[in-house]
Length: 210
Image (cartoon, rainbow, N blue to C red; front, side, top):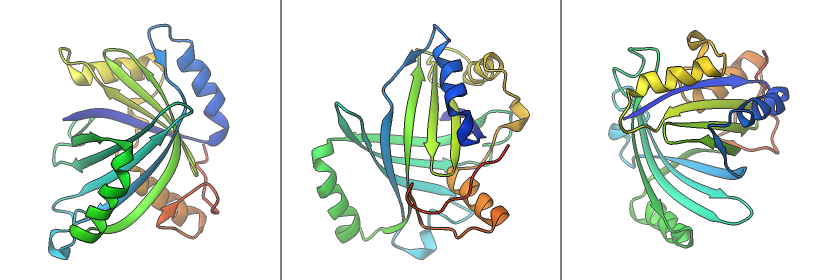
């Protein structure tokens, strides 16, 4: 089970956010990475991951920085209890694979399993971590997301996440409870901007406005 809170900010807040997190001596800052994530659906329409009954996302993600390239398969699903408390509780399963196997993986997904590519997005991610918490600063083409996720194995996960919400002087009631694609879709509709299946930095994008 994943326990997290997510907040969105305008692009001009990036430096302030990085500076704030960098000032927390208990956090270790990781390299800024580029990520490309592709989301797939079940080949059988009656078993669609995007249905209200399942409400899940099957993802393949490539992560790169100046020294290393990684690949990950992940499954994430909202549950009936996801928003029952102040902290999101979601089902999440992740599997790391060798980056060199990416082409083989995509062949199997597309040509053997016949899964359907639904959407994709790119972003830059900077992590701040310790044994209890992982705070992600995600630079999407449409804005900045800050994700606060419990990593402790022996502490109350909701308490850990809420502790860092308080440390960062955020309002738990302003956390965004849905996924990135929900936020992107909302912004496109609000700002009357064309919505793309593949969200990249070279396309016209809406913007988070505070």
